[in-house]
Image (cartoon, rainbow, N blue to C red; front, side, top):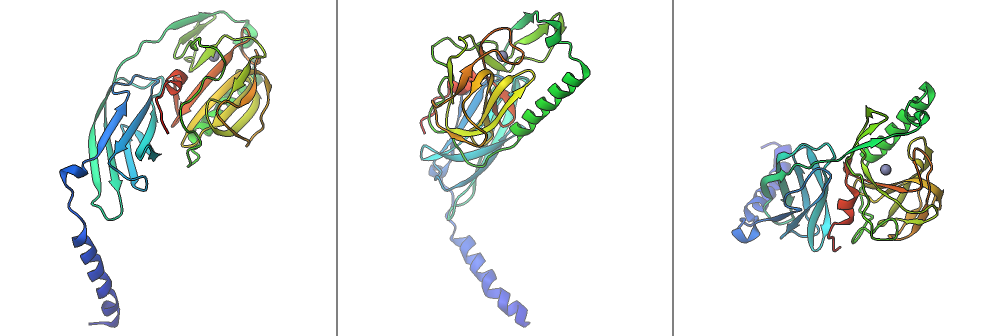
Length: 295
Ligand SMILES: [Zn+2]
C-alpha cells in the first residue's frame, strides 16, 4: 500500500461510517409544503411555506422557471414568488429540496395551477409631447427603463422586510389600474404595471415595509421617483412624487415618510403610482399589500 493511499484510507472509512449512520427518512419526516394563494393568478405574489424544517436548513427549489429563494420564516422556511403581469395561465411544476445536518436530504414536488385573469383596456388621451417623443427623449426614456430593469434583476441576499406590507398613502381606497392594456391616443402601449392612488398633491407617501433606498431619481415617465429594496429581489416603486425626503442608500422602516404625492413626469394630475417587483416579475402591488405575513 502506498503512503498516499494509507493516508486517504482512514478518511474514506470515516465518510462511509457517517453515511451509514444517517437516519432513515420516515413518514413523520415528510415535508409539508403550502402555497398561498393555492390558485394564484398573473400578478399575484405567492408565498410557499415549508413546515417540518429547521430555520438553519438549506432549502432550494423552483416553480416552473422561477428559482425560489428561501428564508427562515415562522419556525420553518418560506419563499416569495412573483407572477408577472404577462405570466401564462396553466400548470407549473414545482420542487423543493431540503438539506439539514444529520438528516437524509428530502425533496417534495407537485404542480401549481395558475388561473387566468382578465385585465381592463384603458383608453387615454394625452398631449402628443408626452407620447410622440423626439429621438433624444426616446433615448433617455429607453435608457431609464433599462436602468430600472437592471436594478430589479439584482437581489440583496438578506430579507429587509418583516411583517405585513402597509399602504403607501393614507385612506382605504384601493389603488387601480394594474395590468390595464393601455391605448394612448389610439395606439396600443405597454400594460400599466402598478396601481394608481388618486390623492391630493402634498399627501405624505410612506415606505410600505423595511428596506434600503435603492434609487432616487427624476425620470421622463415616472417623474420624481423612489425605489426601495426590501431584500431578496423584492422592490417597491413610488412615482410622480412632488418632493423626496430620502437619499440613496438610506435605510427606511415601514411607515416612514419618503416623499409627497405630486404630478411629475407623465401624469395627467396628482396621484401616486405605486409598483412592486418580486424576482424580476412586475407584480400587482395590491397582492403584496394583501399578503398575510406573520413574521
Ligand atoms: Zn400609474
